[in-house]
Image (cartoon, rainbow, N blue to C red; front, side, top):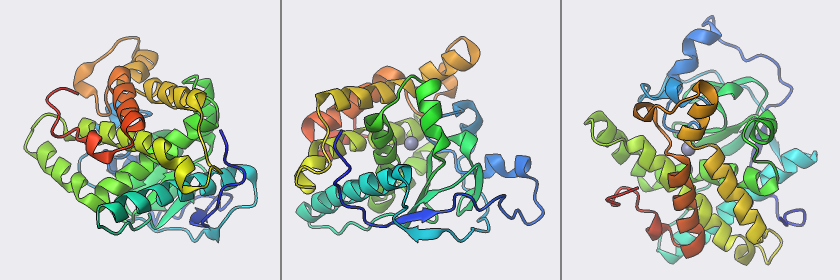
Length: 282
Ligand SMILES: [Zn+2]
């Protein structure tokens, strides 16, 4: 995957190395589940299914804003900037204006967010209240060692997926899904997750075009992205965790579903192909 020459927009908020978050007297364990369940990437789906509302706003540490100097931080900056550029173009073509996330927050272990206390064990997530993506880079090791999905393209897919949730917030899709969830309709959160996968696919189709080829994925990179999507499917995660699949606790979609929607976005390059809410079968 090409990215080293890509543009970094400096929208990173680097909280790495800041130490333990100020919890204002609340125990860490008690507030973990307050974090909004919808937008967590998918480490422990069974922990997040019952949580549909956001937690209390948490005291946020002041990170360093800009482009990090280390390679891992720069990678996140370049990829997220490229994803922003793709969505800017897509929105403009539709006569709308794209607003980037407030920041992409890099942190260690735990940090305050607008959706409660963020913890690395939850995997990467997006908080709609403060419009920030939260990422502990130790997840990349986990992606490799636990899910067998290493490589830059797999990481880029994760970033593009989280930013897909930001697009949903801009378009009001997330609110709609929450209403569906509240009505007990077929899981709104699975449809949101699969749509974010599809949006990540849409990004791959336009990455090179908006960057003059400086950020580019080849077919093998797309395969890596697909593998990452499959690796973090709830059925795969739960098989690994419990040795059997429990469909009623799915929140993100099965591996086959995630692969299918990512591919649909990548093949079409069109967000209108990502209508998981209108689809009769996922
Ligand atoms: Zn997600």
